[in-house]
Length: 263
Image: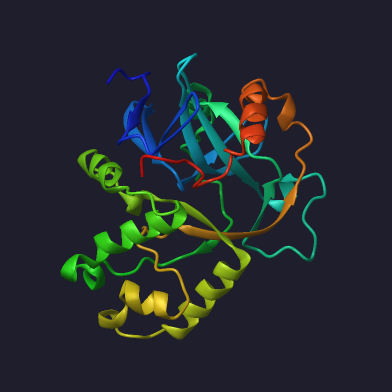
C-alpha cells in the first residue's frame, strides 16, 4: 500500500443503489498504517484554526459511478468550544455533539485526524480491565466482538479485527470513548461497585451484569454526551460534501446500521 493511498478493509457490508458500504479503511498517519472502523472514536481538527474535537465514524461507503470514497461522522466538542460556552450545568466529562452528521471524502477526513492529543485533558481516566482477567476461554476476543457488534447493529467485524491485529493494532489503542449519559452513569456505578474487588472477578460478564461497560483499552478517556448544538461555521468547511448528504437523507440511508444485504 502506498503511503498516501486509501483502501477498504474487510468485505463490503451492504448495498444501496449506487452505494457500496464498508466497515473500515486503512490509511497512513505520520508514515504508519492505521485502520479506522465503524464505531471508532478519534481526535480531529476540522481546520488548522479549529479546536480539537472527537469524531465518531458512523458510515463508510463508495459511490460506484464517481468512485468517491466517503464517510459520515458525528463530531463532539467540549462545551467551552461551542457558541454558548461552558456553564455550571455541564459535567466535567461532558461533550456536546454537532446536530448534523458531517459527510467528508476519506482523503479529507484523514487530513483532519489529529495524532497529538497530549493537550486534551478532559474525560474520566478509565482503568483498563486486567488483560489476565480476560485471558481465559477467549473472553477478551469475545468482548471485543461484543463491543463491535453492539456499536454497529450486529455487523461481523472478524475480518477487520484480523487486519488490525496483523498491523499490530487493536482496540487497546483506543484513546477516547464517548458514551450516552445513561451509559456513563451505569459505567460510573459499575466502577464504584467493583472497587477493591479481586482481579479474578473482573470479567466482561461481571461488568456487563452490573450494567456497566467493560473497557479493555489502555487508560482511555471516558466522556458522555447528552446534548447537541448547531455549529456556526462547519457548513463553510470546503471538505464537507453536502451534495452526497442530500441524496442520503432523501433515501433514508444516513443512519448507522441501515445498510442492507451483505452482513
